[in-house]
Length: 283
Image (cartoon, rainbow, N blue to C red):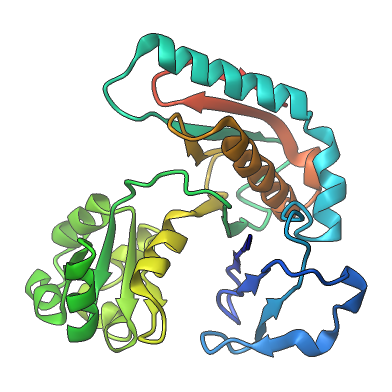
């Protein structure tokens, strides 16, 4: 098995940093600084490959392991079981998403630095997530083959930087991917609309599998502090196994706590809730 965790820290100077953690039977003590190399998308050294045991996805970093102790596993499991039971009892006509709802404390959004970070979960929480490929001819052809929404440069030009149309496009999709030749033209073709919506496209090269990139994007969740001390991220859905949801919750909380300036001291409460169900407090 191969578990991969990807972090994107949005620094003003260096841009997104990409940390990839595949699993191999190698001791942590064998990790060397020589493994730190530069990513093509960043000015600073940014791609760090860390060999791990196959079942060690919870050890993303030593600091994250220690921060997990305040979240009681039993409380999380009970909440997930309750959510699944509620969903079966109500028999909804759609697959409910399970969300981790977060309340923070001891933070001043006006004065403190607003954090933003994304992590790839081991299991896709929203398989029906709407993604659009802004592609060149080759990527458009690949997108058609896998049934992915797409727009080429000509279609983007027709939007004519119209703010309402760009906003409508941003609302229609959860995320965007873009070819290298197209992503450079996004500011000129669309203006700042996608960036303001927090949906600036992710670069896809022709050396990557587009389908794999789509699945990777579907597994990503983003934590971003805005003007209020609360947020929510999808961590699963009611069609998943309880164990899969539990693993997603663990990794999500680990990552969130690592972003906070005082770690657990900044966490006021954590709830799990399905789309139409009641909320369960887990912290």
